[in-house]
Length: 461
Image (cartoon, rainbow, N blue to C red; front, side, top):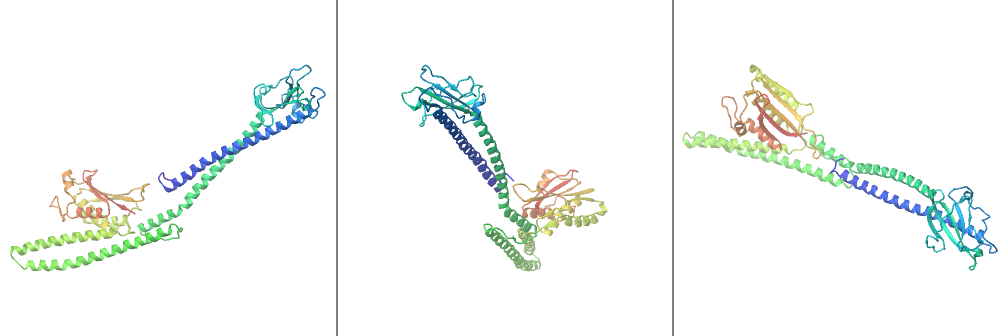
């Protein structure tokens, strides 16, 4: 998944939203659960303190008595974390402090002495440390004997272990975190599958267009989703339109060639009958016109062939017959031609154009080589941003080579640096024109063995 792809954008936005929402939801659920557990714990303490108050302070005939019902068995276990305490507030004679067996000789702090305000029910709530330093949750109710206003007031306190509540909440937090983490991983995995599955038709289109470019298909086939089906129709219409334009161009080029060939032949024949200087001049200019017409018609034909989608030519079947023919032609000079070409190298274009380019380059190299000519073909790897590939063809010889100034002059139509060698001077010019027609390039450089190296770059299938 590349950084700038649609799949990466869809996946990251969905994953980011999932990873943002789940922690927020978990925090809210955790907070609500803690509040519910705290309210339930406080309700239990409130129930115990009310029961102890009614049981101990219900009679106004004497001092408060220990509650007859223990309500909670842990009140009897020393330092269990569950305590109750009844303390007189007026310091009157006869008043005594009552405590649960679990509290032993320790004393609980009074929230009323700490300035804690009562709630709507009259209870005061406070967190404090227990006899052995354990965290406690305290609730205090102030009442009088027999619930009569003129009787001495007493503080009734019930305490419960706060760490029990914290442990319960911590367990829930662990389970909630685990569940949300698994849910997040599952959602991210489902999101990845959803993005891959949703964008799968684009891969189908990519393969279909690749088949069209390689010549395996002529139109984009296959059943696509309703959202992409109009794109399929438009692409097929564009391919058909391109083919129609190429066919019309070929027809016009052929018609123009026939229309110009006959008048030029007539002018040349008539001028040859005139023995004056004017006739010779007309013949000269007519031949120039014929060469120019042939040149530009050839370029038009090349351009028409280049624009055809799906023309593919394997390189090795083209190169090997040319090498065998040239070795026979130059067998008296014992020229050795080495070929390094991968079997899957394919040229995105017409076979006759590749034959013409390789033939001119190899023939030129054999003319100037002393002993050997090298043909090397490489196919560049597909890039991440573009699906186009390039063929890099190098033809090098071990001849005398050229200077920088001579290499700059080569490629001009009809230019020959050495008239002693056979040829018309059109070979490299044709190669340059064909390479440019295929949006490629042809560069001259110094070879590894001191001769000339021609680097030809063409589109690869």
